[in-house]
Length: 352
Image (cartoon, rainbow, N blue to C red; front, side, top):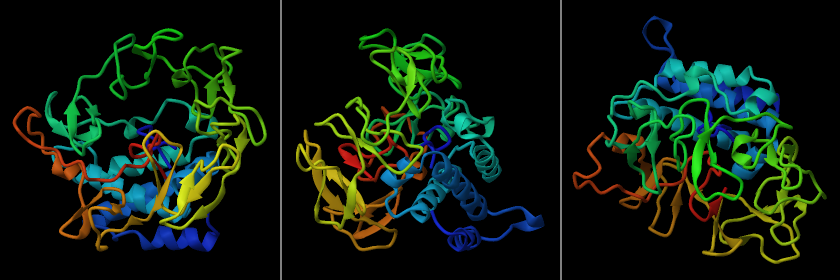
């Protein structure tokens, strides 16, 4: 699921109307939308686009459905705009949401984005502390497991990369088939030659036999166990890591119950919350992702952009990263939860 290619993400008409009307904060002076209103509109649009084009991914990351996606994406939008030195604005996020909502699914799955969705305009220089790419003058924040990362330079075509530092319109992929080094490459279309799935549209994979970007298989079909997802354009199917077949997951279990691939012959057991996998295992335990203001302990998991401080889940994230050089003795707090997408978009050893 894509969040403005930082990776983005049903309900009946009444539920959609309630969300659209209930999340906003009204208008500011002169009728200008407030940040809350703009971010609510953005969140509804990107989550609805995800539900249209990749409902399987939405189901995987947000088993509670569209409202969970909307609330999480709204928080992410607000955090980006409110972060110190950020170039993000409410107007840019509203424009980005409208652009994604207007895309065909083929455009949605491609690696291109509307300019309003691409981080830019930040004022933190290269080497400064960041929690969001919108804070960086380069539009690239390299975060490696902690809340705060480092602003890095963009890498051009053929430049070495490790993740999201490639220039706009490029993706980080293997430099050659079987290579352990990665370079910034141009994305390709469905059916085009490839040797790394990173260059393919997100609804496809690089076929081992065909060496082309092939559509993902669907329920009951053989799959590549290196890919978590099967066809995401319909209800959720996951690639069984033991049987190499696309299977629908079992019904979500409650927090405290085992989840994941529990045996080599049973389907994936989904979690009504966050499935935290045991180290080196495909199985784990289901945890509830607590909301802002809820009581917590060090053993609990707070929701997106929240951490447990003083026994309560409180906001954390980009607003805590002010541009202080990373070698100046600052200690990033790594207690926060994983962002959307990431999907792919999840915490280390965890799936939503």
